[in-house]
Structure formats: C-alpha cells, structure tokens
Image: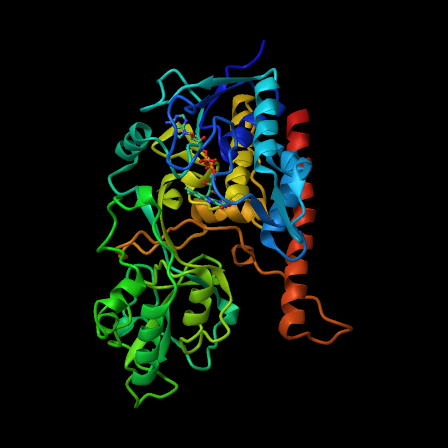
Amino acid sequence: MLPEPVHVIGGGLAGCEAAWQIAAAGVPVVLHEMRPRRTTPAHRTERLAELVCSNSFRSDDCNASAVGLLHEEMRRAHSIIMAQGDAHKLPAGGALAVDRESFSAAVTRAISDHPLIEVVREEIAGMPPGDWDSVIVATGPLTSPGLAEAIRELTGEDALAFFDAIAPIVHFDSIDMTVTWFQSRYDKPGPAGTGADYINCPMDRDRYAAFVAALISGDKAEFREWEKDTPYFEGCLPIEEMARRGPETLRHGPMKPVGLTNPHAPTTKPYAIVQLRQDNALGSLWNIVGFQTKLRHGEQVRIFRMIPGLERAEFARLGGLHRNTFLNSPKLLDPTLRLKADPRLRFAGQITGCEGYVESAAIGLLAGRFAAAERLGMRPSLPPATTALGALLAHITGGHVSDETARVRSFQPMNINFGLFPPAAVPTSEGKRIRGSEKAIAKRGALAARALADCDLWLEDGRRIAAE
Ligand SMILES: Cc1cc2nc3c(=O)[nH]c(=O)nc-3n(C[C@H](O)[C@H](O)[C@H](O)COP(=O)(O)OP(=O)(O)OC[C@H]3O[C@@H](n4cnc5c(N)ncnc54)[C@H](O)[C@@H]3O)c2cc1C
C-alpha cells in the first residue's frame, strides 16, 4: 500500500526538486502547476522549472564559492535540478550555465515520467483543501494573487511582502574598525541590545557632498513594466531617490548624525553617519541601514566604498528593489519549513526568502525530504548549519536577526554566501599565520571542506534512518 500523496503547489525550481525528492523516498506526489492555464508576468512557456531570466546557476567552484558548494551538496543529495543542469550545461568559464530550453524540457520529462508523480495543470487559487494533510507551497516570487491573498490572511497583514527592499550586506571582517565604532543612538539598549549594536561610519561635510553627488549621478536599473504599478514606496525609498530630493534629506533620514560620539575623534562632530546593523546571529554579516537601492551592482560597490570604514568592504549581497512575494520566515516557519500556524503547510523556494534558482531548488530539496520523512513516520533529519544546505535553512528559519522597529521588514531575500556559515579555523602555512587574499582563500577552503564532510555524514544519517 502506497502512502497518501504529498501535494506540491508550483512546478518551478523548488516545486520540481521537492516533488523529485519525495518520490525518490517512495512517497507519491501530486504536483499542481497553473501554467499554461494561467501564467505569471515573467514565465514564457508551459514547461516546469522554467528559468525566467538568466541561464546561469553561477559559480560551480565548490572550494571557493558558496553557491558552487551548494551545487556539490545538492548533487550528492541526488538533485534533479543539478542533474539536468549538468546534463545541459553550456561553456561559461567557471560558472554553470545551462541551455534553458533543453534544461526545462528535460526536467518536465523526468517529472512527468516518474511513476510516483502526477502533474495536474491547475491553479490553486486559495487555501488548499482541508483534506490535503501535507502540502508544499512552492509558488515563487510571482505567486498568483488568490493564493497570495489566502496566505496573507493566514499569516497576518504584513507577513507576506510584495516588494523586497534590499539594503547591501557587508562581511564584518572587511569593515575597517579603526575608523568606525560600535554604538547605538543615545546608547539605547532596546529590547534585545547592549547599547552598542550598530557600527557607525562618520562622514565630514566634503565626503557627504561627494557621496550624495555620486548617488544622484550613479547608473540605475529600471523597474520592469509589470513592477511599475506595485505599491511600495515612501516606507522604503531607494537611497538615491532620497538623495535626489535634496542635499540634506539623507542627513535627516538614515544618515542623521545625532546621539552618537566618535571615540576616534570625540571632539569632532560628524556631518553625517552611515550605520550598519547586525544581520545574522553569527555576527558575520552587517546590513547598511536604510540603503535599499536601484543602483546597478557595479555602481553600488564603487559608491558604497566611498563610505569611511567601507573602503575595502566585501559585499555578501548588494541592494535592490523587486516585486516579490516572500514570508517573514524566521517568525512564521518552524525548523523543517512548516507554517507554525498550520503545520500541514510547508513552504519552499523563493517564497521562503531565499534568492536565486539554485537556492530555491535547495530549499525545495529540503522541504521534499522533510515532507517525505514525515509521511513515512520518520524524524526529519536537518542538515548541519556547517553545510551550505544547513546554513541557508538556518538563515531562513532563525539565523537572521530581525529588527522589529524597522519600517521595512529587515528579513530580506538572501543568496547563499560564506557569511552564513559558522566560522572555521583558518589553516596556517608551516605554523605561520597567513594574511590578505591568501587568508581569504584558505578560509573559504576550510569552510568548504568542513561542509562537504558534514554533508556526507548528514546524507548517511538520512539513509540510516530510512533503513531502520
Ligand atoms: C523577473 C525575475 C527574474 C529573475 N531572475 C533570476 C536570475 O536571473 N537568476 C536567479 O538565480 N534568480 C532569478 N530570479 C529569482 C528566483 O530565483 C527565481 O524566480 C526562481 O525561479 C524561484 O524559484 P521558485 O521555484 O521559488 O519559483 P518559480 O520558479 O517562479 O516557480 C513557481 C511556480 O509556481 C507556479 N504558480 C504560482 N502560483 C501558483 C498557484 N496559485 N497554483 C499553481 N501554480 C502556481 C508558477 O507558474 C511557477 O511555475 C528572478 C525572479 C524574477 C521574478
């Protein structure tokens, strides 16, 4: 007797991967995909796992890049998205780029031909029927309005954002602490702080003027046609738009220089101050407060490195503003991606607040494994936070440090990056400490080696639980 099916809503990157993993565990799946009956503003075909924009899965280097490491872990976990990505790759240097047509055609075929997967072409336009006791919602950043509204009602008014307002995130160890300092405005500890919760970057009048001029003249990305009428503004204006409104606007907004004293020059009052707030529980990532932006990525690096203390900043994520649909996952989901308010519903893919094709598929892979284990009466096995899969999951389900006072929700979509991993000891070279770029390479190598070893142990543990 086969167990009851798990229902997966959405046949994108996450939904296909989830369905594949569930079926691989011997559990039947019904995959509900609304295309071609109804489409999204970005999809063009009726194929499953359609890549809506670029055809790149980004770097494939599992020793030096966090997304390359995620590729490798997913391959080891028998990911359908990685298997077909590899089978349909194109020449692209160190990146894994795929032939989008043959890739999604092959995923569609593999999913449709699987004896345990039934594909139903229909929109689920509201809450799934009550007799579906295990559901994975993987409807992506462009979830259809009926379902989005139903999720919003279930989770609360502001729990499902329709725009992401992404401020850049900087690796802590690239910030120059000889010119910046820790302090909260007026030393206020707030509900969870110490009074020294922000990193402050001071600017004098000339630097401020040059910075504002650079923001105004910087090259910006345009909104897409279907994004233009999505309401979002005033609460989260792009930084360059604030700069454009007047030379003093930023100094009275996110860069106000009040309630703070620079210990490196206590008698000099800064003309403006940029603040960074801790973004993850590990303290390895810091976001630039209020700096959501439509500046192009290259421009962001150039202009934000004008900020004192950030001259050598390495960015874990650059800023952006896009139409998106994503949950406040750290608050709403449990560690196995179930909605705390209705645990029969699991979420996967970009709707959980990860960003990117590979990350969306990775969270689909985990949601699928958790749902299958649950259906088979087994304990879901969580990947350790030292793996790329585990680091991404931990960020979504709890690793992010929320700022409840922020006007814009502080949990924002995130690509995988080494800043999400717990630190690893950096190897020495013949007993000597290594420095600079050599140290960065060694650090990434150490994190990657630990991740792959721990991933193998986790997969082995999963096999052992299944065999018991
Ligand atoms: C315009 C745009 C461009 C992007 N470009 C890139 C890029 O270049 N590189 C990158 O890495 N990431 C990109 N992303 C981000 C993201 O990684 C992708 O959107 C990715 O496809 C997300 O995977 P997913 O499975 O969560 O959602 P999707 O791949 O979008 O899959 C969701 C599926 O659910 C279906 N669906 C929606 N609502 C319902 C419903 N109610 N009932 C049934 N089916 C439903 C949709 O038709 C779709 O097939 C982009 C996002 C957007 C919006």
